[in-house]
Every structure is written in C-alpha cells, then in structure tokens.
Image 1: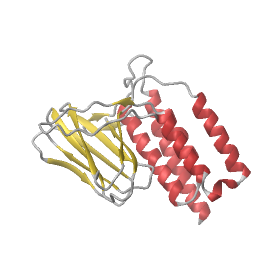
Image 2: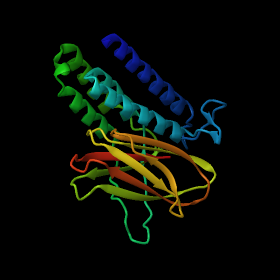
Image 3: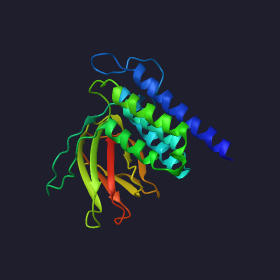
Amino acid sequence: MRMLRRMAALGVVACVCLVLGQFSAGQDKTGGKDKGGKDGEHKHGKLSADQKALMALGAAYGLVQYGRDHKQPDIMIAAAKVIASIPTKPGETVKDKENKVGKAEKYDAKQAAHEILDEAAKMPEAKSDTIKKLLEQAKEDIDKAAKGPTVGPLSYKGVFFSPQNPYDIYFIQLQGGQMTYTDLTSHMGTDLDLEIRGPAGELICLKNSASPSEFCDFYVQNTGVYSFKCINFNPSAQGKYTLFVR
C-alpha cells in the first residue's frame, strides 16, 4: 500500500513537471509570451504561459497537502522545489463602493518553499539521513535558483488572524473574451472556500470543499471588476493563504 501511494505521488510530480516544462517552453526571453502550436489549447483558446504556471502551482500545492496527509516529507520537498521555480507577480485590487479591499502582501515563492521545507523537516519521518540530505540539497537549490522574469500569475497574499476575520475580498479588473484560472491555497491546514462574482454581482463560481485549497476556471464574458472572496470556513484555524489569478 505504501508503494502504491508513493507511485501515485510520483505520478503527480511527473504531471507537475510536465506542466512546468510547457510553461518554460512557451516563454520568450523578453515578454514571457507563448509561442507554441497545439499544446495546452483550451476550448476558448490556447493556454498562456501564465495560465500554465498557475496550473502547475495549484498541482504543486496539492502535492504538498498529499505529502502532509500521508506523512511523506520527500514529496513535500519535491513540491517545494517546484513552487520555488515558478515566478509570479503581485496583483493589484480595485476599490469597490464600500472601500472593502483585502490587504494583499507580496508573495515570495522562495519564502513559501522554505516554509514548506521547514514543515517537512519537523515530521518524525524526516529524521532519516536520506531525508536530511534531501532537505539540505533542496534548500541549497532554492537559494541558488536564478530569479526568473517578471511573468506568471498574479498573486495576492493574506492571512486569517482571528475569528473576527472570516474572509477577505479582492476586486480585480478582468478582460472579457478570455479564460481566467484561479487558485486559492494555504499550507497551514485551514479549510478555505472561494466565491467569485461578476460585475453585476452574479455568482460565477463557488468552491467549498473541505480542503485548504480551491481551484476555479471560468470564461470571462464581459470586461469589468470581479470580486474574489476568500473564506476561512473554520475561523478558529488561523494561517496564511495565497490567491493566484490569471
């Protein structure tokens, strides 16, 4: 059974690396735009490099949760290295009529990766010499990694710090006629939900599974300001989260 779980996890790693490889191959050296042919096409058009990066991030954070649930620090280490390798850029929010805007901090991929490594290192299963060596090598690789170009999904980093702070709302300008991919994730064990509404307040997407991450992709019919509500379903569980949008 343990071997089957490990094979499944390695399959997820391979999928993440495949998406990440497509993301890298689709960039040029100046603008980070896709060049490619039929790879990564969607019914509404070809996926951009930024959208592929967001999907890789979502898969990598899912891998972190898998490693946590199954007590496998080596899987978390592999996911941390993937997360550190994907560039993002800070997103901007638009104030609504009531001036309610979630406070977005700058997301640091390397810092997020190191936090995951620190969590993995605290597991009882991380006491072996093999895992210790993997941790040391991963930290060294992440620290030495060259800073990528300013491309990638928009990132909004926040924190749920008290029961009186059950949700944050981000108001983001979206362009009509294109796909938008959204990933809300936390590696602190919270139960997060995601609610997206359109310019007229219409419900676009509601994701409320019992997990620390939610993913939603939708076609933007009309240009306008869309609200992204990040909900902490269990307010007693405090922790950081990141919202990725592209």
